[in-house]
Image (cartoon, rainbow, N blue to C red; front, side):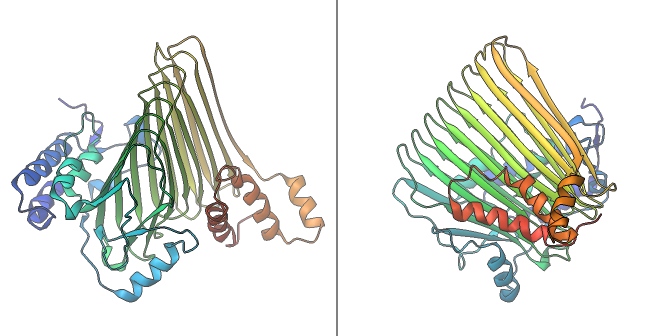
Length: 438
């Protein structure tokens, strides 16, 4: 029997029965079976409650009362165009794929066609959709809920030796038709040996609606592969945003994930990473900025199961009045993972005494020849630095903005592409342009 650390909402099951016939692939018996099995697994477990350690900083109690049916397609072209323009990086050359309310939009999308790259939209390929919905051993309750109700997503297969010439932009848009609805997508990325790729993913949505965006990603890197994923979270002010990514990294491969969290009322980013080969590297970097009832939760786990591997985590948070954050970073070094090098750093800057930052770095080390470190700080702006800038003629808001920008910029300094690096800084600047509290 499952230990009752979880919350029940029976209406989720009845809601699934009401909509399953309208989900993509409903005419395929095997897809229906996979969805039904996933829903059963979710209902057997339930919604993570406050006693589940990984969710101690983000309460999901509201999900025991609220229900989010799958979002509907929307063709409000004016709204779609406005949101697309805010998300699209026109200075980044390359293809762009757009999902609106959890469904592919062919009119705004230009599928990549580089040699050595296979790109598939799940709703357009039954076999790929079936693979995405296959049961995953040890899948979380919310992962199973996503499998049951996913409406679309994409599969990327990069052949061995392929170096993509241009980044791939993926844009997820939530329109005003999503109030009290869910947007659930799935992603599979298969990177062959000695390949290299960059993916830029942006999540953006309407400001006035309460919707639940939920994405699950599985990334697999073969030997010597190099994959970088950049993510911008710009969801609406009342949105719930959840992203769960699982990455396995083989011999001498490098996986990098860089994120910026700015939107949503509640956001949760889970990064579960495992080394499956030696001399590999995982880099996780991110910044989160919140105010006025916003809650950002970053949860990472890196499984050092192989020797001679390196991981680096660098996260910076800025919280203004009413903002809350949590960083939970766990590194597990197995007994045979000798010569492991693992660094973890989380620093938080509070702009108000009415903000809250939680930091919980963890190291579980079962090997003896390792180099591991972690650090976590929570502090305020330096009064002397602020005074110095004010004495040079800057007003208080501008002075605070400059100091905060310098604090956050460390996260983006390693981005080689100047245009992309500038985009991260500009989006941070947009947040800082709003007046900060004393």
